[in-house]
Image 1: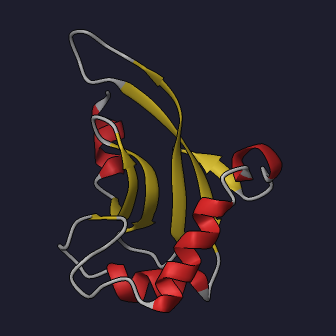
Image 2: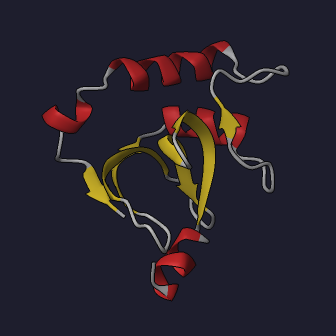
Length: 119
């Protein structure tokens, strides 16, 4: 992984992790200096034996008001990523509804490329 890739990763804050395999492979992130939330999912990976693995993620913007709900509930600075389902009082009915909709639309990668990107 190049130094510029590491610098770019420093600009992301993982809010919620849905799935983990040697690192997060699906969840919700946002830019540290922005208000847009993104649903990310592992798209491809190249396993390396002597360095860090290369991972390519698909990204879908989560529009407001859903993004605002997620930022308000999980976007506290310095908290790190919460593993879903979240315990300890987090996970309001509204946030659960947003996450349920994201997870139930797992076919989004195949059907909606108009709002996607990769990082």
